[in-house]
Image (cartoon, rainbow, N blue to C red; front, side, top):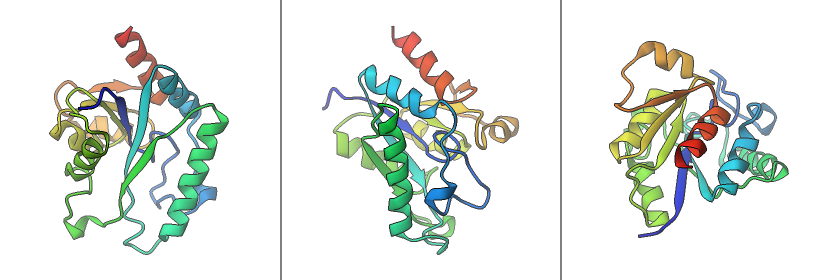
Length: 183
């Protein structure tokens, strides 16, 4: 088992602005104010930052792998400019009707993260703006954190959050809370 301090972030609505029409190009990927600085704070506190994101736009043929790679390149570059590092991006390319295990809210992507980092995910913070983000992490023992950016406001209004879910205005306030709680 690894001693890695890990945090798992959803992408759209947590790190960058979300769109009901999907983020389909690097030009559409726009960081949420303060998110890159929050990731830098996590790195400085010794956290390995991992992104776990559903990207069904691939199977819907809204964009291809080359475009997804370009979007992620823009995200990594923005992180680097803020003095931050995102260690890895895990994604599910399937639409919901594919019924795969890697699409959140199912835990397959989380199991892949646990295997890659040789870590038990019990207590590992997972941050999302939708119920399925929190459910996927909760199923493997992660500590769920909802941010109100992206779909977060609608998610909290719908209810049904996993037990012990904490709610934060955005990624920056979540990181502030996490770092104060960890001392």
